Amino acid sequence: MKWGHRIMKKKLIKILNIFVDIVVVMILIVSVLVVTMSLTSKDSGIPNVFGYAPLSVLSDSMEDTINVNDLIICKVTDNDYDDYNVGDIVTFPIEKDGETVLNTHRIIEIVDSQGKPYKSGKKYYRTQGDNKVTNPEPDDGIQMSSTILAKYTDVKFGGVGGFLNYLRTQEGFFWIVLLPMILFFIYEAVRVIINVIGYNKEKALLTAQEVINSSDLTEEQKKRAIDEYLASQNVKKESSDDDRIESAEENNSPDEEKSDEA
Image (cartoon, rainbow, N blue to C red; front, side):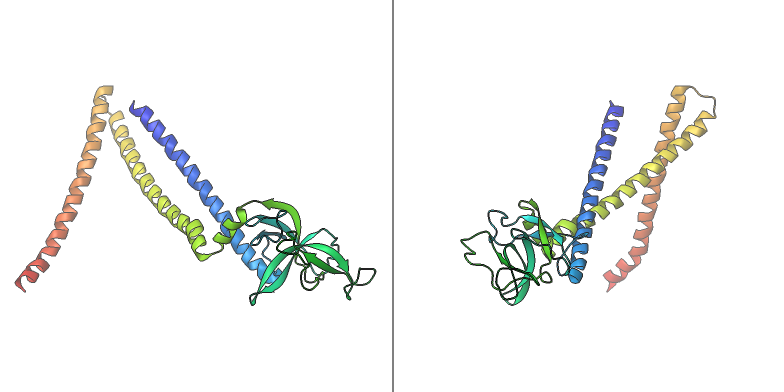
C-alpha cells in the first residue's frame, strides 16, 4: 500500500513539474514577443515579429469586418512597396488627441496627387472605415506608400487584442509575466532543497545496506539493522540541532542579564 502511495505521489509530482515547465516556457515566449515588438516599433514605426505586426483593435470603425478587441495580423511593408489595391485594409499613423496612433482602414480609391482617379504617376490612396455609421465619409487626407506601414493579412483572433493591450501595461506585465516568474523561482528553490534532502536519505540508506550486506545476517536482521541505523541518524541530527539551540541560548543569556540589570 505504501509503495502504491509513493508511486502515485511521484507521478503527481512529475505531472506538476511538467505543467510548471510548460507555463514557464509560455511566459518566456510572451515576454520575448513583448520585448521584440517594443524594440521593432522604434525602427519601423509599428510593433512586429519577423515582419508581421499583431495589432489590437481599439475602435469599431471597421465593424463588422474587424471588431473591437480583435487581434489582427498585418504584414509590414516598406516605403518602396506600391502594390496596394482597392479593397486592401492597411495600417497607417494618424494624429489623435495630440499623439500619433495607428489606424487600420480600407482603401476605397486610388488617386493621383490632385485627388483625381489615378491614371499615371505616383499613386495615392483614399481610405475609409467599413462602419459607415461611425465613418460616413472618407478619412481626411490621402495616404502614400511611404505612410502606409502594414497590410492586413485577413488573419484575426477575436478577443485576444484586449489581452495584449492589458499585457502591455505595467499592471498586466506584473500579474501575467513578472509574478509567475517569481513564483517559479521560489518553486524551483523548494524543489532543489527537497531533492537534496532526498539524496542525503538515499545515500544514508545505501551506506547502511553496504555495511549490513557485508555481514553474515538474515534478511530480517538486515532490515532491523537498517531501521536502527536510520533511526540513529535521525537521533544524531536532532541532537545536533539541540546543541545548536543550547549554544545560541548560552550566547544570548549574558545579554539578557545585562538588560535585566539595566
